[in-house]
Amino acid sequence: MKLRIDAMTCGGCARSVTASIKDLDPNATVNIDVASKIVEVDSTAEQQKLLEVLAEDGFPAVQLA
Image (cartoon, rainbow, N blue to C red; front, side, top):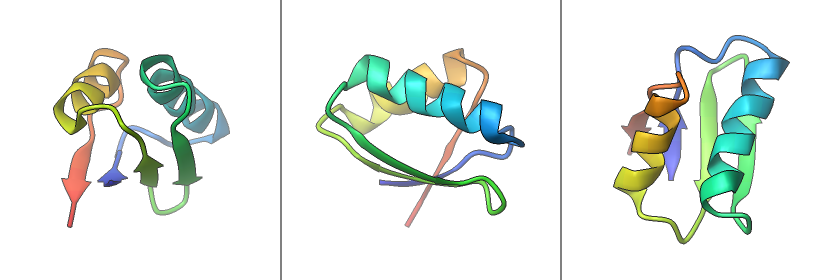
């Protein structure tokens, strides 16, 4: 899944996003490019639940194609 998170502006944000995803799915693979605000996630978690958790944690995400 490829996401854009406009609220992610620094390395601390990237660590928080990763932690949010890993809390939901400890086995998830997360790759983040802070400069482009793109997050690539390989997870077995439901996509909608992942988006909800990120939004709850202050990082609303838009799923990209």
